Length: 157
Length: 179
Image 1 (tube, rainbow over the protein chains, first blue to last red):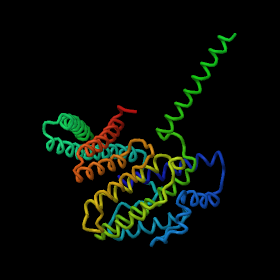
Image 2 (image 1 turned 120 degrees about the vertical axis):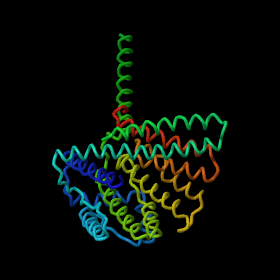
Image 3 (image 1 turned 45 degrees about the vertical axis):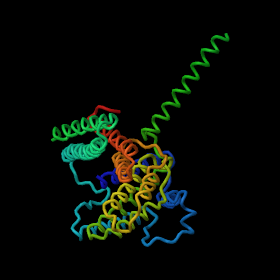
């Protein structure tokens, strides 16, 4: 889920860069240092005096991509398979729609796990506070949410 | 004449309020492009690299190194939502959530008291408004867990209900029944 979110953020950012480039064309060479400056944000002054971190990454996108690829290779050598490079898409449109459906079901079932886990905790509190309506009602609502999420997950192909 | 001017004034005020409302709505729904999209790209790539490094450290069983990496990530810098939209806030919540989860699951490594972890969660949640996402929900659930450990059950219930509400919103969206 984390990998998907990060890829989504990167993809969204790339699209937005493309969109903004139409309004204010700038070369990548001028954008990358600007990104690094802005990325430093409020902490830029702080970083100048703060002790240097142990690991350093390139401040430009190309450098980061190279390091990302290197880490991918490291992960692959360790047997971690979730290492497809950013932007590398080999899926067909049919494959993509199947992947979309699978992704949706995965998200629904992940949500079911999260919802039911929280529901269990709420109901645990309700047990400890037996006789307190606030807790009992919260447990009932949470159980209902968990049931709804479980049904949605079960119904998903 | 003055009546017509009054009507036009009312109409203009309505238009301004409507536009303002639309702007606020779009901003809250993250439908307005970030002022610095390149910042979001840089953040996404940096976090991807860092999270993969943490994956590798966990694969090797080096919990202390994973915690250290996430602590370095926590120290920022984090771009403002104005520069990089709420997506940046959600990614921040992901990093904080992962760090707090790891610290809770491995209290023997570099022990941190519960109240310090609660402060960490509060620091992560911050004041920024963010659209519903699973990372913020997880951070709220962790807050509940920490309050429960502290014996503050009312606060724990409140945090759990917040997490549940966010996850329920996400589920409704997936099922196509919510905004």
